[in-house]
Image 1: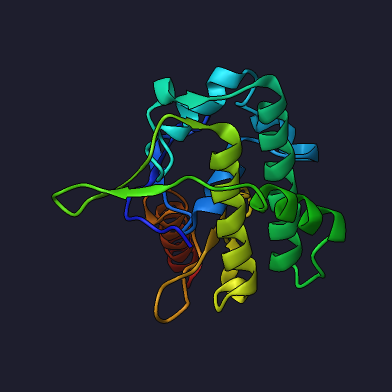
Image 2 (image 1 turned 180 degrees about the horizontal axis):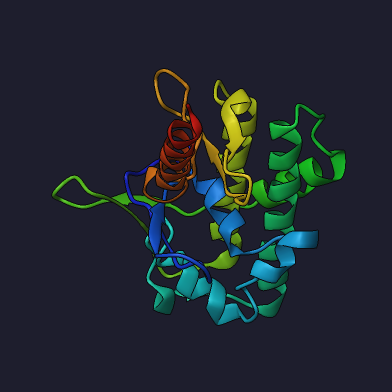
Length: 203
């Protein structure tokens, strides 16, 4: 999997901005929208939207050097929707939908982004690049994730009102929240409030 310490900047309609690291490149794509109820979060309306978002992803691509066609934008949304359904199935202990697995395999069959290294030892990617190569990188990361040792650690945030998905790559495997800065902190506040209310009600 393509990992990084970089986190996606999240700007929810309600609440303060926060940083979210889903732990895998392929799961980053899920924050751009999705099928069914997730469609209200859609941000990939035009080809340029995808190019701009890739600059925020852990790939850190230059949007001016990523070519995105209308058909590639459609392919990006199809891949993302398939990844969402696969992640939902995995978090619920259900079989992966065959049609969505096939969608990931189709995207992964294309040549991916070519990696590059700077003289300072920093990793980057060869650009210009087209979106098909970028989507192949996402799909190949998904193949690694869903077939690897961390496949059973794909989880949905433990907050009742958050659907962000992440892979728990921590050593103890006890990550519960999309972000301690957001949902983890909100849970601490709720727990503290509940303890205070219980103490006040005690005789």
